[in-house]
Length: 219
Image (cartoon, rainbow, N blue to C red; front, side, top):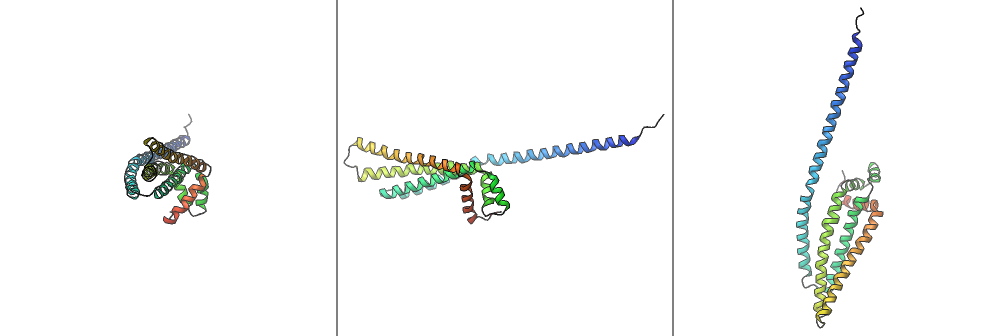
């Protein structure tokens, strides 16, 4: 009888150990990825609460300031503030739309070449859901509310200074016309701005990033 050679058995056992080690390392990596994803989900779940707090204080401050400025204001001041609030809302809406439409790859390439503002642009692109929420939902909605306050101030000024002798029906149609004009301007300019933001998304985000990099050091 021939003695069995122990070498193949030893090699087989070593192979099995290596496969087990590989399986263990892969499972450990999978567990780490799951933990990271769970942490990210937990962080994302806190955003609605943060948005609520930011919106509450910001809207209260802006509305209080607008009430103080527009109380007994002349019609030219009301019209000027309405145009400024409208432009601000459209600008932020464009930034929010561009954040969700931009391509992060060019920013990564510029960041590797250490172009100023590129790292900030990468962060804005990767956190596009937060940027869009802040710009479109929080700031955009607040601007819409404040523009309504400005419209009411314009209506009050017009009815007080120019239409005192007109009938109630005439005053009614004048009020409706003023509100309709402001609403139409808001919707039209936002539609134009969104179309431009989709087509020029990277340029807009990079411009915002360069502006922010002036006040904040990139790291």
